Image 1 (tube, rainbow, N blue to C red):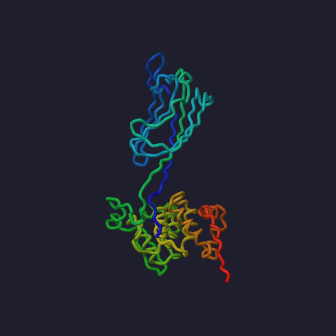
Image 2 (tube, rainbow, N blue to C red):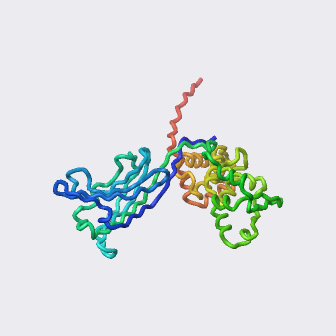
Image 3 (tube, rainbow, N blue to C red):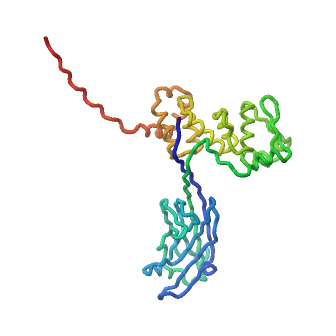
Length: 343
């Protein structure tokens, strides 16, 4: 049984602001140095409000400096940033450019996090003539308890409501020629492959049906049901479920299928799981990935001849990840001399 206490997901957003400083700036005389502040509109990301402030810091020694400060409405967010800050007199004249980087920091919604000495405030005079461009690449790290059996449930299952209350407008044809009614809206919402298929005038879209005959009928039925129910069934062929979810790019189902497989880690599936994690970018750097890699290393003698190991062995990066799990070997203690008694 393989389990993991916590996994780390990363959400990335690029924020671009380009405006005339005078249109947002608040200026006031204060201790022979102007107070300067620009507050950008709030942006909602991952359920929290974010905004950026360019201002002179509170410290008296920094009153002539301009700083960039980032605020979040949640007190428990961890994030890192790359950002560039440019000032223009006109689009063809750059007065200065700064590129800064911050490692992950813990936010407090009231105080924010920032860089107090980006540039001299005097470089932004006269304010009305200066254009500002601020680009921030924001990476948000969310920690959550992981359990493949603890599937997040929504209070309102929209897919189920659509299935029960709206007449189907599409059909999935199975291997055995049986038909599964479906809705274009649901298929397109969860699968970019279906979305592309149904948004162009190709045979499937025009005929109102698609044939999926490269997977057993039961697997296809469970896959379609999972789209409507927003979760996997409790019992299914998770390897096949991963394959069909991966084919139609339903990442949530594919990722959860791999997690279920990893809970039943053995020599028959370990190389397949590890190769799939790397190829799809799932669970990168998590304890779950390390444990699967460690299992492969510890069972190399049994796995070297399998087709799945031969497949991942062609990728030097995968082999290196496996070999990194070997750790330090304990030194063998010297054998104690034996005392032979002679007659």
